Image (cartoon, rainbow, N blue to C red; front, top):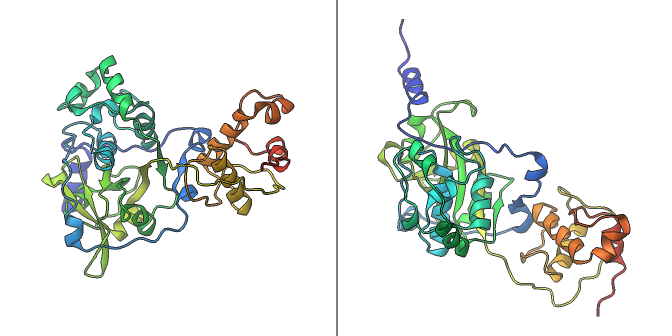
Length: 355
């Protein structure tokens, strides 16, 4: 029987363990996903510059991490963001070892974000990357590592709902690295200039990988747009790749980044009369005014209210409710905030007069 060469290569790749990846789909229940911080909630409309390839190549200055034969690409991509944002050399295995699906292979994006922002990350010298998945699962997180890590916890990581070149460029080209999850075949991803060659199913694609788009690296080359990425798995021996706009738009299924909180900007209480309940997913001028009030109350830590009610606004409403339990919660028989902007919270804000 005769076989197509590309089909033979496909199955070789499918069953090969030579090039580990580890980006797995989010298995959290919907109510947990609703708590996520969303790019659309804080970014608004952001103008961004474009660069040349020569300018993008100048970003090849950060330590190139190597995940070796582990499935820890997500943890490595997140650790590189920490290096870029804060000039801190952390241990990817500190993040990988604490994944919620331990000792399964790979991890989800929210695990990496939660661990880095809430528990921090220890220095790389305290926990090195092993040479196999088995060794990675045997590693021990000591009290010294936990104490060292908490000094480096961050403020928050932001998910992107709309994933396309322009949305990601609005973050990357203004100076912030972005982690993306992609799927591909080996021969697609092993190239320096990544483009669509095959048509793999997302569920069985042999490469499901997390990598970091380096900051200020969105560029135009021969009338096409690319990003420069840094790859911890070293597919085909390459540490950097240029990912085309068409490939990213079709094959990227997760994108997120890390941010710092901003100081309160509103010196005066923003008065507004609310006439409807608000929840995750709602949009409008009333959501924008709610975010402004939450800013004033130190319950919303970002400078640009966008009018999109997402996980950050929900968290802010919960903080507001917990801040004024007598006025908001107790009248309706609650002791803890819910994040739902209902009648009791509306009545409280509508009746406030602050000089």
